[in-house]
Image 1: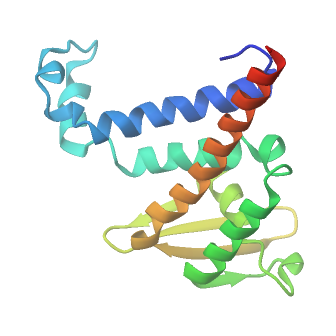
Image 2: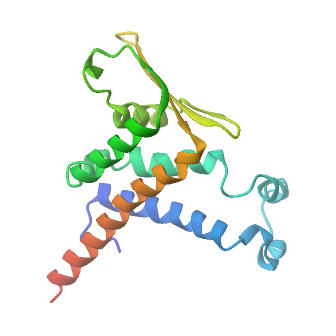
Amino acid sequence: MSTGLTQKEDLLVQSYYTFSLLAELCNNKLLESEYYDGMVFGVPQIKEDLRSIGIDNQGCVLIALYVMLVIPKEIVQQKYTSEYDSISEFLRTHTQNTSTTYRKDTPTVEYLKHIRNAVAHARVEFRPHDVVIFSDKNKNTKELFSTELPLSHLGEFINQLQKVHIAYSQDWHQQHSQCNR
């Protein structure tokens, strides 16, 4: 797939496809399979721990958000502005307990930018069975941002980000196939 992609675009596609593989392994119940039972791990403890924590865990959520928010910022955010506007509106609607001291957040809080920064700097916490908390801070200006996204809306947030990546991949394939005619 790398043909015709810049280094940054290739990194974006490979990262997203690797995350997609993790999601599909979960969907296909890899950890419950005979194949998994027969796998030999270099560190056997990891095999056992994976079975207990599962593939769809907090770490995987952080990976998904990193792949779909942090890596693509300069590559796809400009091209898919209406999709990202829709995602921002989703966040405005579904986040709660938001607080910000950022001057730029007046009159409109920049949820997507702050959540991206929170993910990029691993300032993400999970309150089990409740919310994911995103925190952003500017160490120079001492400005702070915090918001909570109920876990009941986390899947939809990831799904909306995923739609952008699917559109990007489809657009690339369409452009590439037209060039090869």
